[in-house]
Image (cartoon, rainbow, N blue to C red; front, side):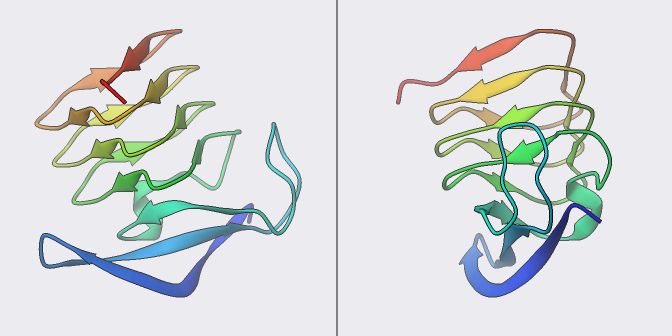
Amino acid sequence: MKYKLTKNTKIYNDITLYQIKALKDFGNVEKGDLGGWIEKEENLSQDGDAWVFNNAKIFNNAKIFGNAKIFNDAKIFNNAKIFDDAKIYGNPEIFGNAKIFNNAKIRGKK
Protein backbone atom coordinates (compact mmCIF):
# COMPACT_ATOMS: atom_id res chain seq x y z
CA MET A 1 0.00 0.00 0.00
CA LYS A 2 1.21 3.49 -0.79
CA TYR A 3 -1.21 5.43 1.44
CA LYS A 4 -3.78 5.11 4.19
CA LEU A 5 -6.81 7.07 5.27
CA THR A 6 -6.09 9.06 8.42
CA LYS A 7 -8.48 9.88 11.24
CA ASN A 8 -8.48 13.51 10.01
CA THR A 9 -11.92 14.13 8.54
CA LYS A 10 -13.96 16.93 7.08
CA ILE A 11 -17.55 17.03 5.94
CA TYR A 12 -18.18 18.30 2.42
CA ASN A 13 -21.73 18.28 1.01
CA ASP A 14 -22.78 15.83 3.75
CA ILE A 15 -19.96 13.43 2.74
CA THR A 16 -17.21 12.49 5.19
CA LEU A 17 -13.80 12.88 3.56
CA TYR A 18 -10.57 11.46 4.98
CA GLN A 19 -7.13 12.97 4.63
CA ILE A 20 -4.58 10.61 3.11
CA LYS A 21 -1.07 9.87 4.36
CA ALA A 22 1.77 8.37 2.31
CA LEU A 23 3.13 5.07 3.63
CA LYS A 24 6.16 5.05 1.33
CA ASP A 25 8.15 7.27 -1.04
CA PHE A 26 6.93 7.49 -4.65
CA GLY A 27 7.08 10.18 -7.33
CA ASN A 28 7.28 13.57 -5.56
CA VAL A 29 5.66 12.18 -2.42
CA GLU A 30 7.64 11.15 0.66
CA LYS A 31 6.64 8.66 3.32
CA GLY A 32 4.63 10.49 5.98
CA ASP A 33 3.38 13.28 3.69
CA LEU A 34 -0.23 14.26 4.24
CA GLY A 35 -2.26 14.65 1.09
CA GLY A 36 -5.71 15.84 0.16
CA TRP A 37 -9.11 14.40 0.96
CA ILE A 38 -10.93 11.34 -0.37
CA GLU A 39 -14.19 9.68 0.57
CA LYS A 40 -13.00 6.08 0.25
CA GLU A 41 -10.01 4.05 -0.83
CA GLU A 42 -11.64 3.30 -4.21
CA ASN A 43 -11.19 7.00 -5.12
CA LEU A 44 -7.37 6.80 -5.31
CA SER A 45 -5.42 3.86 -6.68
CA GLN A 46 -2.81 2.21 -4.48
CA ASP A 47 -0.77 1.60 -7.68
CA GLY A 48 1.24 4.07 -9.75
CA ASP A 49 2.22 7.58 -8.63
CA ALA A 50 -1.28 9.10 -8.57
CA TRP A 51 -1.76 11.49 -5.63
CA VAL A 52 -4.14 14.07 -4.21
CA PHE A 53 -2.41 17.17 -2.81
CA ASN A 54 -3.35 20.20 -0.72
CA ASN A 55 -7.08 20.68 -0.12
CA ALA A 56 -8.26 18.76 -3.21
CA LYS A 57 -11.32 16.58 -2.71
CA ILE A 58 -12.24 13.29 -4.43
CA PHE A 59 -15.60 11.67 -3.72
CA ASN A 60 -18.58 9.69 -4.99
CA ASN A 61 -17.36 7.17 -7.57
CA ALA A 62 -14.56 9.36 -8.95
CA LYS A 63 -11.26 7.54 -9.56
CA ILE A 64 -7.70 8.88 -9.70
CA PHE A 65 -5.10 6.45 -11.00
CA GLY A 66 -1.98 6.01 -13.14
CA ASN A 67 0.32 8.96 -12.49
CA ALA A 68 -2.41 11.62 -12.24
CA LYS A 69 -1.95 14.49 -9.78
CA ILE A 70 -4.74 16.58 -8.24
CA PHE A 71 -3.76 19.88 -6.56
CA ASN A 72 -5.05 22.94 -4.69
CA ASP A 73 -8.85 23.08 -4.20
CA ALA A 74 -9.89 20.88 -7.12
CA LYS A 75 -13.02 18.78 -6.66
CA ILE A 76 -13.40 15.52 -8.58
CA PHE A 77 -16.70 13.70 -8.14
CA ASN A 78 -19.59 11.68 -9.60
CA ASN A 79 -18.04 9.15 -12.00
CA ALA A 80 -15.12 11.28 -13.23
CA LYS A 81 -11.85 9.50 -13.97
CA ILE A 82 -8.45 11.20 -14.00
CA PHE A 83 -5.54 9.06 -15.14
CA ASP A 84 -2.31 8.65 -17.13
CA ASP A 85 -0.18 11.77 -16.47
CA ALA A 86 -3.08 14.25 -16.21
CA LYS A 87 -2.74 17.15 -13.75
CA ILE A 88 -5.58 19.19 -12.25
CA TYR A 89 -4.72 22.57 -10.61
CA GLY A 90 -6.54 25.46 -8.99
CA ASN A 91 -10.19 25.09 -8.14
CA PRO A 92 -11.95 23.32 -11.03
CA GLU A 93 -14.86 20.97 -10.45
CA ILE A 94 -14.70 17.86 -12.63
CA PHE A 95 -17.76 15.63 -12.48
CA GLY A 96 -20.29 13.57 -14.38
CA ASN A 97 -18.67 10.94 -16.56
CA ALA A 98 -15.68 13.14 -17.46
CA LYS A 99 -12.42 11.41 -18.36
CA ILE A 100 -9.17 13.39 -18.29
CA PHE A 101 -6.06 11.53 -19.34
CA ASN A 102 -2.80 11.44 -21.30
CA ASN A 103 -0.83 14.61 -20.49
CA ALA A 104 -3.88 16.87 -20.06
CA LYS A 105 -3.56 19.80 -17.69
CA ILE A 106 -6.67 21.52 -16.33
CA ARG A 107 -6.29 24.79 -14.41
CA GLY A 108 -9.02 26.49 -12.42
CA LYS A 109 -8.90 30.18 -11.54
CA LYS A 110 -6.88 29.72 -8.36
